[in-house]
Amino acid sequence: MSLLLSLSVTSTAVPADQVDPATVSKLAQLLDHSSYSYTKAADNVWTIKFQGKSLGEFKLFVTSGGGLIVIGTVVASKGQFRTPSEMTLKLLRLSNDLDRVKIGLDKDGDLFVRIEASARVFDGTELKAAVEQVAAAADEVHAAIKPFLNLTK
Image (cartoon, rainbow, N blue to C red; front, side, top):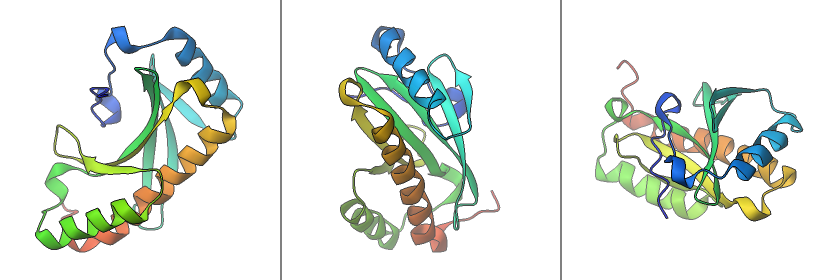
């Protein structure tokens, strides 16, 4: 199931017919009761700031749609990297090595890391595990692809 998400936080959107008000409310309550400092970016989008060892400061987005909770971040924008076969192999190996996360390119060509979880069984413990997993994976992916990044763009 595709959520039609653009992973840049400013343009993250889930079609209105896929947004469940009860899930949005549940997610807002889970964030309120979490230890994370977050910002509401849109009606169904929140961001959490992190500081990575390799990635530096970055924001995770948290949203919902289609019965799923989605937590993710952009690791590198399209113009920041080239994709030689060596980088592709590194990403494929990381996709196998890292638990629970997806690594991919969004429709804009940005490299992302995200988790999708069922909203039905999502709770505070799962929120913390998913957020921490995405943050750690994003930093690890960034460190692995650093040789392929052009960070001056």
